[in-house]
Length: 171
Image (cartoon, rainbow, N blue to C red):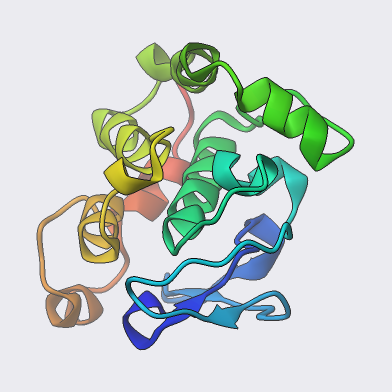
């Protein structure tokens, strides 16, 4: 999606479908926008629970906001809870994100209970600095647990992350 210049801006659990074969598909492009690789936009939009810090603060942003939202989604699936407290508006969310240290602590508080692949993925996606978030190909490779090309992933069947997310969690 990013390779063809689309920024989604509303990646969340309700906007991701999983086929019987394990393929992930993003849907609901109502807030999506064409955005070039080196371009920025500034509209405050998206679902608060998945909103990147730079959107909440009203700053210019790029495709990296989708990686943040994907990180929140992965956290939701891995820990069966949201990484941040619920807020009612983007100003409250911006205040929550004002303290970078607090954001990182909140995200990593449950790390010791998860799979190392999930830890690495969360660390790469939930970087407070948008320019430190991973590129899409690297994120996809981590999500599938192996450094394969996209063609190899399609041939090899059910992705390993589905087993990780559906297996019982350690208490």
